[in-house]
Image (cartoon, rainbow, N blue to C red; front, side, top):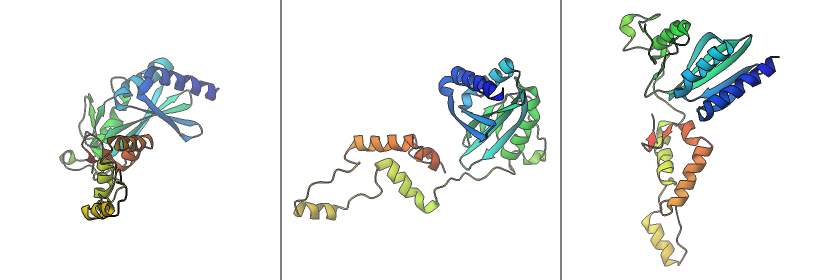
Amino acid sequence: MKLAQEREILDILRKELAENCIAESRISTDRPVVIINREALLQALRLLVEKFDSRFCTITAVDNGVDFELIYHMSIKGLVINVKTVVPKEESEVASVTKIIPGAATAEREICDLFKINFKGLADSRPLIVPSEWRDVKAPLRKPMSGIVAEYQKPTVETLMQQGQVFTMPSSVKAHRQKLKLPEIQTTMARPEALKELHEIAEAVEFDKRVGYDRLKKKLRY
């Protein structure tokens, strides 16, 4: 029964959210996770509440260094559906779900206190578990902006993503190769299509996402 119910719920979420339904995973065999774009959070939860009479359990917040992960745990007749979204730490803002689920206010206020995430539209955003004077200066569970790339490795990663190669060929080496009448080496710096292919591969394996590289600003986010 639960398996059939789970399939129905996930099918509807996939259909209604379309490209905003990014991926699926599992916390355990009976705890499916639907990963969605932040912009579709209210739509996803409204679907669960209005169509399946889903009940709100709580929100889990995780600081992974460059982003926050928010997981909304929703119970539907004994089945727990977990809706996960990612909030960039540079913005630290997500829509409040209290207009759909008024009981989520306490969880949102706690997360705001501990991680300094702003829930846009939350009517009562007063500090709940930390002193008022901490609100703008301290967030006990918020980490400094950080990623998996060590400080000394950052120039290497940024150069690789910007140019497609870590080191450029010295002019002395080029001159020596010409003297020996060796063929010219075509690098990614001379072949834009090769650099484009490298970026496509990096995106396909989520390299830029894993290391926290901002392709628009052409640098790491930390």
